[in-house]
Amino acid sequence: MNFDFFSKNLAEFAKVDLGAFLFNLFVATVLSTLLRIFYIRYGNAISNRKRFASNFLPLTLTTMLIISIIRSSIELSLGLVGALSMVRFRAAIKDPEELTYLFLVIGIGLGTGANQSIIAFIAVLIILFFLWLHKKAGGKRFFKEEDKLYVNVSTDLDNLDQITKILEDNLSYVELKRLDTLEKGMDISYICKAKSIAEISLIKTTLTALSPQTRLSVIDQPDLII
Image (tube, rainbow, N blue to C red; front, side, top):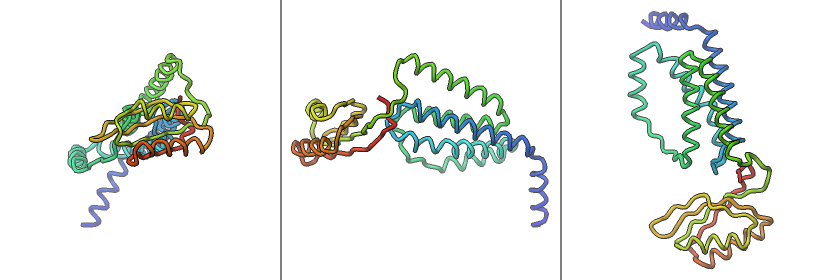
């Protein structure tokens, strides 16, 4: 019985076009790497883009592997639907741009896994070109090496202007990026520039003096776009 099982799987393996599979694997790797470089340089998400983009390659190759296995088997396709129905993804995607790039990564995996690597390659190049034109037309500087900070303020206060003014009075650059209202208070995210640690310390002291419940989080993000 074990011998029959081995023979059956060996026969299935013999049907695989290994050359085409390796070619698709190569194209998927190249496209996901290219997309990673593009996202890090031209993306607008305030999160750590390098860390997020490190998921592009494994997600692409995993999608490609799944599609390569199930594309010729209805039974496996139905089994995959059942398996995925039990999976729960709890990682929150806070920026719509991140979701857009994830769909593009999955698209690369689907295209290469379905043996449509040439179409996938051409389509991704065209998409990236139009994305580049769109950002170019926006007139924004894509990348600038400067010390930028991601500042998050969680407080029980409701006066946004007061908190923003404290930052503006002590920092050379302040830009509001996100505001979430809580049951009591606010959670606010800024992109800022600071000339010294003393400025950060002064902000912490001033905000805490307004309310002991205020929490300040400062993260160095030199690759953020302003």
